[in-house]
Length: 414
Image: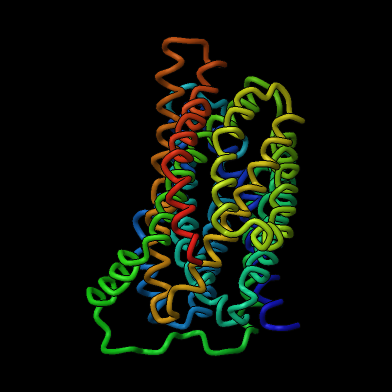
């Protein structure tokens, strides 16, 4: 097995665990509270580290052996999932969830702490992994390597993982968290076997202010990379606005359980897997600029489709389209970034990029809960749950209008 294959397999296992967690984190929160703001706090704990830790993660990724950093962060995530599993097991049977507040403060705090540890470790681990990949494959094969990597990740993260997570949590609530801890343990063994030099060369004496300034200066002068970061940040904000609402819509408006929700997400992942396989061919046929323009233009359409979906089959279909376009966008943006950023700056520029691209996720999650809570004071709760998705569709339209020409100009010379 080659180093790249071990890297992909380890990423597949960790993303399988992440896919299981896609369902179980928010679903467990909905078993402790029916308040959309309280439910949102758990995914906020997972996503807030992208805003708080992205910059130090980039500086550290450019200072240390990236393989060892991945190993340390996977160990931290294994421990956090073990903490959540033990806390849930000790709290069984769970009390009925109230419409305001939580049924068990100690359990809710334990879940929040575990989610925060997982979120912080994810920031450092993912940044290190993206900066490590160019050392494993030639630069002219980055699109192919990224497409293959993301396809494997999507199989675990969005196809198999959610379905397994839903099945596990429906059978025994602590089970998916315990199995995730085991999956990270196996991934650690695989990454530990990868040989090579993954510590960037020292350019000069270490000084974090100067190092951060170098990364900022590069991003400031790289107009297209900065544009991609801002547009991705706006898209991620809108994506998170619909996530909490979607769980409650499935539970309350459609009357479905965890297993059905997991299958909906798994079915949607098929679109992402197809996107990963055909993205390189699409880019070659229509060009990078037109590819990202069309992927961005699909955003408001897919959000409206979600809002008007009246059953699980329609919902699965639109999420498949959503994942397809998102994967194609990522193939263009990440491959371009990996090719254009020098290796010794890759960690810092990636961290600043992700600060812009991922830092808005918690804002979207909180907005989703606020919109639902405010909306249900004026209209029926069933309609209030859909309001964040309508707002996201409008935001997607604005994003497309603002980004269309700029993307065309930016990629015209590449």
